[in-house]
Amino acid sequence: MNPDTVTEFLQKGFRVTLGATSTLIESLQDPQKGAQTLSKMQSDFGGLTEEWAEKGAVTEREARNFVDTLLTQQGQPAPGDTTSTAGTTVTTSASPVTEPEDQKDLRELTAQIAALRAELEKLQKQDSQP
Image 1 (cartoon, one colour):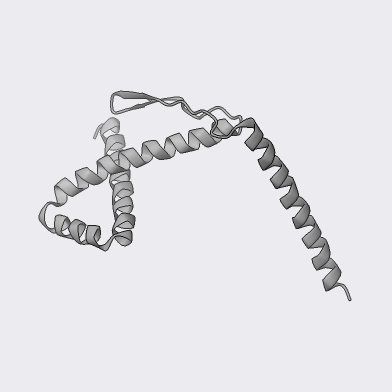
Image 2 (tube, rainbow, N blue to C red):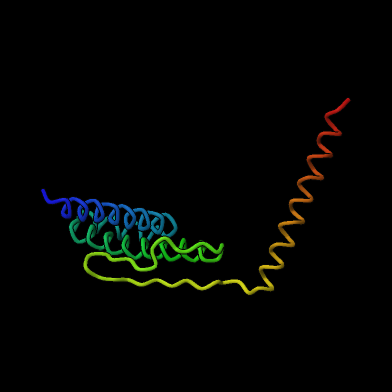
């Protein structure tokens, strides 16, 4: 068996699993959609796995873009700005979502939380001492 074939097989399996998980979550949130999925599983399982694979590929891209955005916001380079999948090249670019003023506010809030945590620990130590 060709290593590329094995890689593609594993990747498709991963995407089908992602798509199926996503569909399961949607089915739990909407019972009517769950009933439709169940009937589709009984009649056309092959088509459903293809649908799950496509949905999984979309979810994978969205997750990768989300992680790249988080890494870019933290000042780290994204792990793969250009990704090649099944002969298609996808170029992702992430821009910071927050404004500099929002970042300043976040830093201030984080400092306040750290101060509150330290004060809480201090009070807990005082309470535990006889």
